[in-house]
Image 1 (cartoon, chains in turn red, yellow):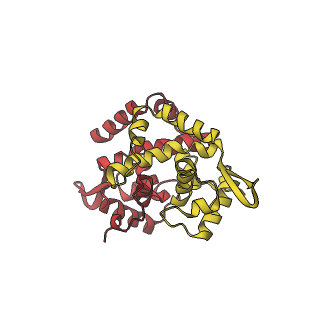
Image 2: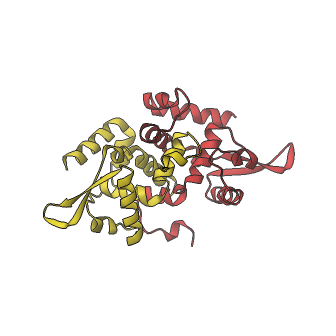
Image 3: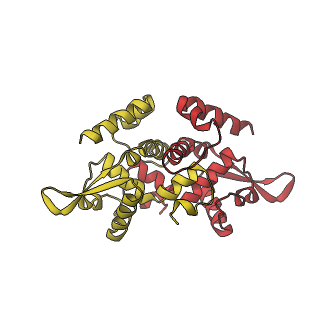
Length: 136
Length: 136
């Protein structure tokens, strides 16, 4: 059975949380979208201090789930380059919802202008950020 | 030290995930917003099968964090009635982001019309759902 077959409800919120309902998965997506992280070493540098075994586990799981892809670095074949798939990039609205809430209620501080741009026009924001990722 | 003092980054996404980065917290918010759940018994009935000790732990933590309040039921003083605070209700955009993604990529099925209404006009959707909660 796959993870999906084992689900206990058809709720799409529950389905999403079974995939991204641990904080590390979404922090990895954050660092790939907003921090330009592309390698294991880049991701290990996150200020939250992810453990090496958790990072390796999450990267393998996210690849199996189609959230990211990995390819050997053309300049150094021992190193993998990770990229988000469209499925991974489509987590951006979830990140922005969390960011808005974390800034409003939990004292988080977003880079200047980001939340304003998101709240002003969410669709345009997503299009712009996703296009920048695709061009990267 | 409070949970907030112990944080390792100022990122608002990380701050939010330290509070709601476990799936049960968001499923409890879901059941209070969309399922009309108001009591421990209501919440225990979620199709995902939350364990009694996890539910009790999460309710106490969510109350300490200002996401919900509890008051004795006027009709039965042994029973508590839980209600989301404005901080809890403001998790709605996060739930809708997860719902959209879970329906699109993970086979989840939202109640008819809900995702369409959200995507058509997110701000109006939030205003309408939050007003219904306040009137409840």
